[in-house]
Length: 345
Image (cartoon, rainbow, N blue to C red; front, side, top):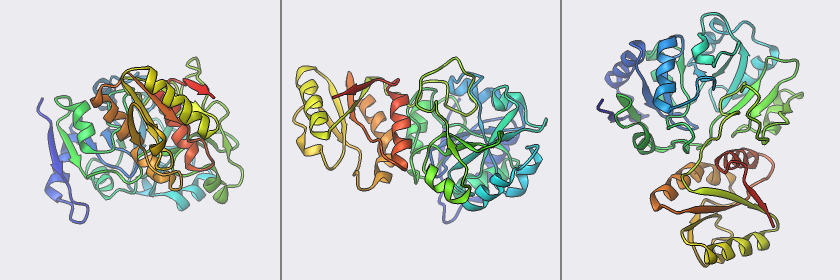
C-alpha cells in the first residue's frame, strides 16, 4: 500500500481532500490526522471491522480501548446510555478540547472499539482539521495515537509516516500539534468522577468545574493484571528504543549522577531543561524546554524520544518533572516510557 501525505491548511481547509478522507473512513479504511494533542489514527468507530484495522496497523492489543471522537455535542447521546450532570458541566467547560470522558455505552458501539468493555471513551477535539474529518467520516471516529504500539506518540505528520508508511492510505498533515500530550481521561461511570490519565487539563482545573473529582490511585503503578478502563493504562507506552531511566532527587545531585553515568557509559542520551543544560559535560544532551513553561516540555517530549532513536543511543537518563498541574501528565508519560525505571539520588 502506498501512503499519501497531504498538507492541509487550517485557515482554508480543502473540501476535496476532506471528502476523500471521509470516503476512506466510510468504506472501512484508516486515515491519520492531527488533533490539538497528538496525531490520531482514525477509523469508523461504529464499524467493528474498521476498528480491527486500527489494532492491526498499530500492533495494539485488542483489549486496549479506543477513544471515539465526535464533532458535535448532539452526537454524544446517540452512543452513551446516560450523560451525568458532571459530564454536562465538564463538556461545557472543556469541549472542544483535550478532555476524554468515559460513559456506559449503547449497543451501537461495537466491543471492537471499546476493547470489550461496557463503557466508551469519548472526546471532542478542538483542531479544525480533526472536526472536519469527523463530520465527513460519519460523525464517530475511533482514534488512538497514530504510532506503532509502544512507540512515542506522533506530534508531526513525519512521525506518523515513520511508523505507518505502507500500512495506511492517507495522512493529513496539519503541521506540529499544539499540545503534544494525549488528552486527560475522566471516568464518569461511578459515583464520583475519577481521572484515569492526566493531561493538559489538570485535576485542579477539573475541580474548578466539578468539586468532587478524584485521581486514580493506580495511575503511576505498574499492574498489568487489571483490565484497562482507559486507553494506555495497561501497557508500556511511548518508549524509545534505548533503555530510559528517570533520575529523581535534589537537582544538583541529579545532574552529578547523570554526568557520572554519561562519562562512564558509551552512547548515553540526556533529557534536561534550559535551566540545567549547561551543567552537562558528556553524552548527547537534549533540552526539552523550560521548567518555567511546562507546556514547552510537554510539547517536545515525544519528539525528543524519537530523536534519540535516530541518534542510536544505548541508554537515556532523564531529569524528573514531577510538579502540580501539567507536571503530572509529563511524568505519567515518562514513567510509561521508562517502564517505571527510576533512580533516587
